[in-house]
Image 1 (tube, helix red, strand yellow):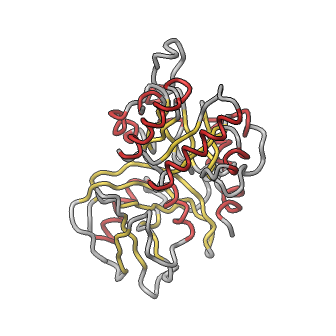
Image 2 (spheres, rainbow, N blue to C red):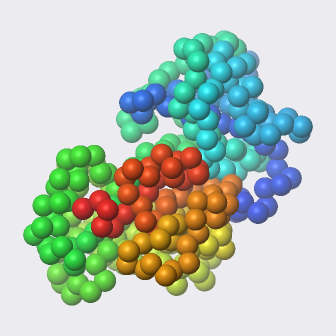
Length: 326
């Protein structure tokens, strides 16, 4: 079963109440390497490499189950844990709800407490096979940059913006959105192609705002769509391209989830100088809106690099920025 087909039928956060639950832990070292395990031969799915985790008992919260599983499987106590995404997956032995957490600190070196094999891997250059299909989608999400930079060529001028883009790439920005609403079509095509060419040597991904055909023609990685583009759709847009959803509320986030969005951007979170009177979500509203979604969500509106830890505390994947990044 394909990831896209499985998602369209299963990954609706509002229908997950009666599905058996599993917890999944993404143990991340500071350099970004992630721990995988392969279960002993007498265990279910023993041929696959997977992220550690296990059953959530009926009387357990997901976080409690995760901490217990890390102790039982790896002999560690997870000390920094945050909820991330929630997905369903149709295993050969049944449909399960996966509550996925990111773990960034623990108290000891993980050990194979249940006879499993362990392997630390760079998720961008995975050298294990086969990996459990349910966890492949998790890795795709994990590999998204924590900063989503939105182009400002119209404001800065083409030459200055491209200079700033080069600096941003040199400093680690790896996810760019080409969003130039007032740019003439021919110029936009040339500009988008230039951005793609600059990003390729860095492995940075480029998203095109609102135009699937332009994304394909310039070799971009994906498309970023507004609610008016996806609100009435019934199937994932953009084929094999990545697709991101611009969202402003829980309803739009749920529609993006139904359409298998690779990630979403939720705004406005904080007040901005450009729209000082606009109603904002605030941190509590943001955290409530993104709860139990199957895709990573970026915070947009009043963001700056110094807020990255704050957005992660509120379970966001990262921050999206316009002026703050250039």
